[in-house]
Length: 118
Image (cartoon, rainbow, N blue to C red; front, side, top):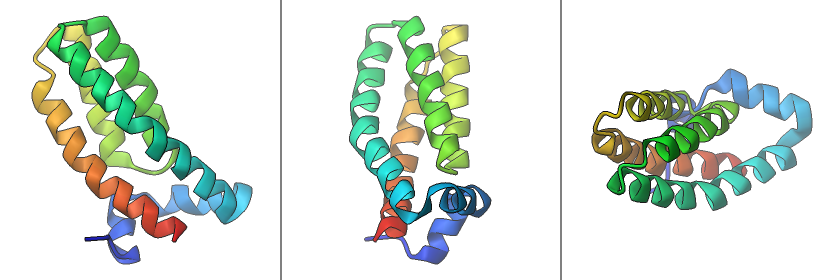
């Protein structure tokens, strides 16, 4: 089921989206969304492997880069979850529950982003 534009506002920061529109228009947003939708699933898979291997440095590095990517598209909760994942990697804590939350949030964010690009 796809998110409506109204739902997307709750998931994505409307100020960030407006700023992106002002910066480069809808085509620019569409390009950014395309990149994230192509890259993030691979990063989630890499995170799952790093968590399984207890590779805390990889968890921190991937989480850090994705925290920024999500923030740039206005996915505030997802960015916050990546921040928490980065901290869990730094502290060598169990990151599995946070990754599970990120994967669930990604479903919502992806749908909201796709609703912006038609």
